[in-house]
Length: 321
Image (tube, helix red, strand yellow):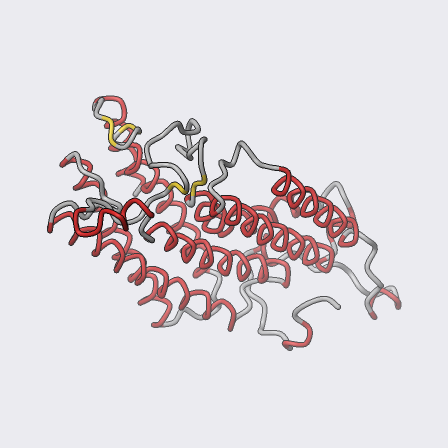
């Protein structure tokens, strides 16, 4: 995928064709970068399992095959100068689009299997374990939300058998209109790619958030406590889930991300206040553990930093009270 991203970047420079309002190699470039990040993150998560399993290996191989098939279709259609997504203009286009739908469904199931394996194990201390688990759950939700794009628009339903496309990124406006730089998200209507993006990249965001906390632990003593880090991870996951719901609601109402109305701003303000309050509560000084009361307790090094896997805990001890 990294090599394909380089090829697509060259295509952006050398090929001046435009498709649906965007440079024709922009989609292969975005998808290659996204798949590279997705694959690296899942590989890192699987490496934290104490004992690799055959199920985990098969799930990993399935993700790889599904990703390669998906990118083969996208790149092939780009070379042909045709849309890959939503294109049902010819039998070949329709078959390729259906193939992409099947591969994404298979990729989702394989990712779910990996999530189940990581829920059954403990790939680090409690903060690292829940950063991984909740990141996977949000990524699965983001992948599912991508299915909203395959629903036919009112114009497509009116066209009936004469339609040449099935589904769209945009809500309330046609695809290919004015767009934000870099992301390509619509600026005049709703865009369902936004919740898809937020959900999927929580897979990387939550573990990176935890690493940021651990990097600051050397300067801020409070962050050295595993219970504080766990609370902060839970607050971050809750805030991300709320943001995911908000951008989904905004997109389905046909509202551009950069043009929120009063209702959207009100909900965003509520999420911000709740997240800030949760962060303050998470940073409160935890009650001392038994070892701390006797003067013999010392903070354990973080498993997220050392890479060590801890034994599976008592489920009752997983989450803080």
